[in-house]
Length: 491
Image: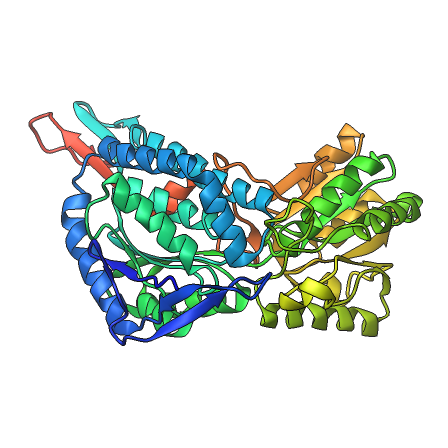
């Protein structure tokens, strides 16, 4: 049986309590391994190591930091298949998607490594003679990174790579459902030559480890991706301490299909966006806003395709949809199916927990589509985080945009249309951080900012150069070489 450990100050160590917990494959129930059930004492040790390492890491030349990230990226690339298979075993997504998850980590490593030779500041002309003005980025110090289970390698790299290239040191708490992938990632950093104490891994629950990181006075920033409820708690507690916080929270993403759309292309995009990763994505399309002129045709094609999607172990090539991550998540998803029925939505496909044969060993839910859903129904307003989507009919583009914007979230949206004017209206009027035209609601590329509006976050962005704004502090520098007193705005 594999036993995994925390990584603190360059050493693999057990939780100080000696306690452990198990993680099992959500498709088969087979044991993945045992992991340390850490607590505040482990966080204290990790923060102390990171605080000490920061003294040296902040002075380590940024291009040299980048060289370490390049080595991490290369190691990820060499081990892509092995990592993908372990990811599928640990959290269930089908193997092709797991490979994509690892590829995001590779891309982020190489992209942020390049920022080590760039990391833009500004130079500006001074309003006074013989004076030089510039701004530079500086690291914050120790940062706490708390990540979810649905992208167990990609999302940690979204946070770790920019944090490190900027000169910060890290205390990393992964989701309890996917600790093995966190261990594998940290092992690669260790092999790549990252100095001891710069990256520390503490495995445990949000209550014991997450809160300890959140409340530690030496942690300058919390970067959190997860549920809206937990994110609100993080924001409140960070505000009490004057601590920086970056939040990436929920989504209730919509795909608009207009009457002039390529319907078959839209069907492809909807199925991928709604049922990929078993709907367990913050960018999943859980609302389909369909023009009434094409609604029946669209739904007929969706039902035909969704009913043929094959559930199973994500390691099998025949599998289209893998398990959801846990029994509790399965029950939560199915509860929303019951809510949809009670609200009067028309269930047209799916709706059941799969309990036949080998599927009974895991946590499987059928791809599920509701038709003729009203925008005010709970299944059209609340994040389900499972393979359930709702078709909402509309009569016009104006109504479609109103419905798309009529939720508390604003992460991703999509419109299928052949009319360039409609596409540009959508770009102008849809209130989301990400918008796709003639594609699904997922698949962000790492060199553009990722994040949302309204209840999806607190205005920060991950990926792209925008990520550096989260992990750096601006310093404005003035060099006066006039040899006399010069008073800005006075002289």
